[in-house]
Length: 370
Image 1 (cartoon, one colour):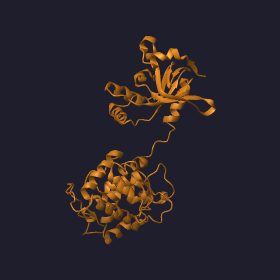
Image 2: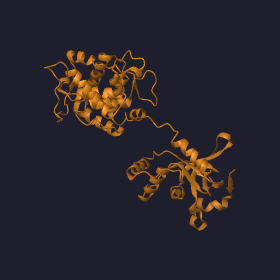
Image 3: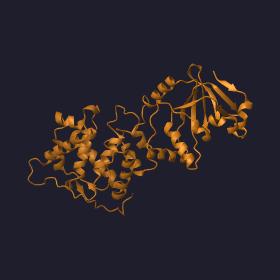
Image 4: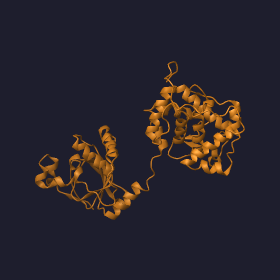
């Protein structure tokens, strides 16, 4: 049960008197606070932490180590925009002083979730900033209780899907908006079959991340498109679209998935698990072959003639080795790519695949809408 200290004890900090004289500089203060009753009658406190008292928060052994400076710097940037999530705290006691919405936590307060945000906030203060950081405070906690909650919040918590992160980039990066809108068109072979949500449903065949990666590899001759980091991939795809043009990029994506549909089928796929040709490694290998050979391009536009389409269609996607490679990563992609190239070239003395020059020689279009 909370023990509320009488107002005169807390008034020096609230009314602007010198808290050091009363020893209150060692406490944590929560501004604009409000008590709330949660499950089983437990009382929690929600409010904004007084930046001057962030240094008084304690860290227990169950916490992770502080992130590298480059990661902390990102959080500092987030403080500048005011978009930092609240942290979770545990006070190992019940003694609280309160006046007009300001709560002074008299017992030791430990960080349960938010060590990196607190670290960034302290560095932001050193740089002259004022971090705005909200908090939820639990009372009467023990290290055992805190450790279990830390596990719930960090280990058992479902991480945000990269599909959602990509979807949320639409407003800032136009190539993501372009590809998102295309994926929602019912006339597109993959229309409404690409997952931009946290979880895939039975109608989804591939994830948004796989879709963007495939498009990046397909256009990798024209610019960077092979990054595995989400934000770098999105920015590199933006660079590529600015080179080839929005309409050309859209058309190339449509042609690519039409090719997959014509060769092995997309529209009639019911269970994605059995569609080897829609697995990430297979799509990557096929896109890479198209990207790196002159036979498939007319300038910056993808073009697959009937003879090549017929030959690609005969690739044994039901072969156990192909299925195994398509479900793997790393060198499996190179092996699968080599198998596809050998298959396309097999039995040909002429019209074999011709590698493109590694040089990027695509100028920014002047007549096409970007």
